[in-house]
Length: 71
Image 1 (cartoon, helix red, strand yellow):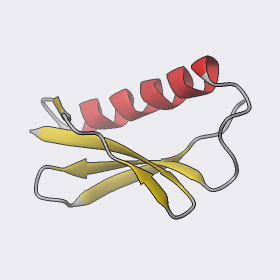
Image 2 (cartoon, helix red, strand yellow):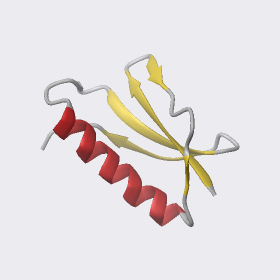
Image 3 (cartoon, one colour):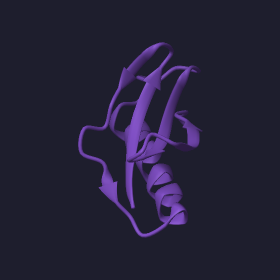
Image 4 (tube, one colour):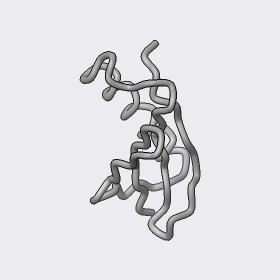
């Protein structure tokens, strides 16, 4: 199934134009966690309290949202 990993910073959306073909919702969840970790590592201090990674299917169904926060 095709999943898109879109970033929201408040009302600003940064869409994932290509998406990723993944075998399951669990794989999409794991990929989302990896993306959040990479974003925080690559762009320290860039994301605020309203920053979220939203995972949606190709038909637009939101399957999860992860806050983008540095640990």
